[in-house]
Length: 332
Image (cartoon, rainbow, N blue to C red; front, side, top):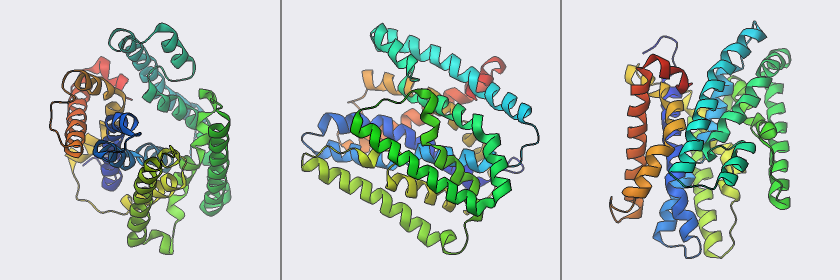
């Protein structure tokens, strides 16, 4: 184990990276079968819901680790933006070429995606993260001026604003520009910085497990029942749904309290997670084109096997890339 590592957080990072893969593997099962709601739909719904904690968890962990006293704004920005800009630029180019040559996407659609901050749909996360990094020093200063309790209250306010914005965008069909996406995830980032203040019953492991289980069970059940009734409501898939927010906060608070024996393997695998996030769509697309229907017939087992295959292949590729010094900076 690397000194100073938190094994519980490392484990949650790994699980969250797998959760991202769950979402992207299962999404076609949901969208292609939502009018009939068969076994394939329920399998897709299950794995999609299981992955919905992933992005919020990554943002909460970022806030938990970053929102600490910052001695030099210049050093902070230089370190953070250097680490994220190069991967963003390079992987945007890679996926733009991939979209054109492999997916045969029309150039106009590629340009529109690039303009709206999605050179390939999962890369939106990097643009959003840059916005949070931009305000991180100000938030860190605020946290240590007003204390964790009032900072947590401010985070709840940020969640309320974000949920209102999300509801309005859904109602009006508004398409926010990438430059403001970070606002929707500000609550997650801030709650990460205030987790250390959670006391008493909010730290009870049984309660945290209960909240997480209930939230994701509700998302799975209500989404399925609504679609069966021909009400195509995507609310519970939103990262700003009440179930996503409460479930993700409960999970991070739970795992930061989990005591796991020191493990160099887990620490090193955790270090691969951002690279796995960046690269996983390439092996997934290859599998979907050439082997997607040939694993097993059972939709649940097929989704799990494809997800694990994509995760392992992506981890191995990232691990090999990290061995090549010029490529190491592309992995964050």
